[in-house]
Image (tube, rainbow, N blue to C red; front, side):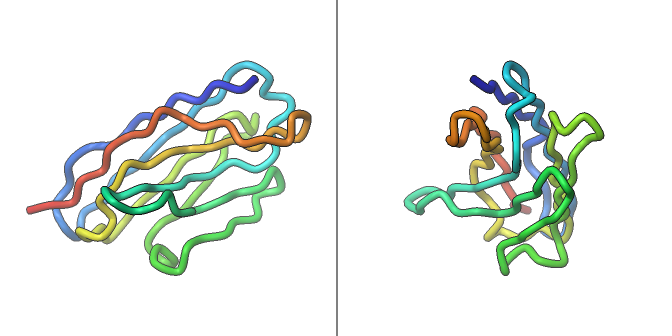
Length: 117
């Protein structure tokens, strides 16, 4: 089992920046890829960014060039730097960690990001 705790959400004005953090505990030795999804009201949960153990990243087209995902050296935390935020980025952001031993994703509790003037 992997437990994930997120932090860093909040209210930001359009054009502003925000950073999210997610720290894993438990069976962290089994973690492969980590990343972020988001879900706006009435919408499905969509991938925002993923990052492998080797540091390879993949981004949703809507955030490319604005968001940057990274991981710590121990590979037990994942971060999301969000720049040039706009109203369409408003959502609950969830971090995830894929376990190579259980072959399933584990999810954080979600953190609200609201972009509004």
